[in-house]
Length: 100
Image 1: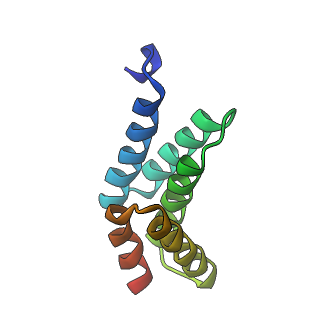
Image 2: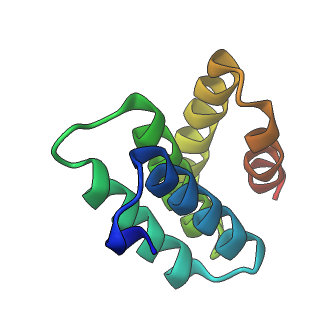
């Protein structure tokens, strides 16, 4: 449906929600596919919002296979960005990954 034409926010929210659903299902490859789709959609006109959700998706997907110092540092930065932006509903997955 998106490819037939839809307003921009439909693309943004669909990709964000698809990433979230696939992360919840433990589907790393699927989540990363939609991270790439979100980045592709906003490549010509980057948005801080989409950059944050793409980064969140990428590092949560990496965390599905374990956390190292780099992933921990990135997730800590992502958590701070989410808190500053008021995106509290997206904190639990980040906090859960950091608690592993």
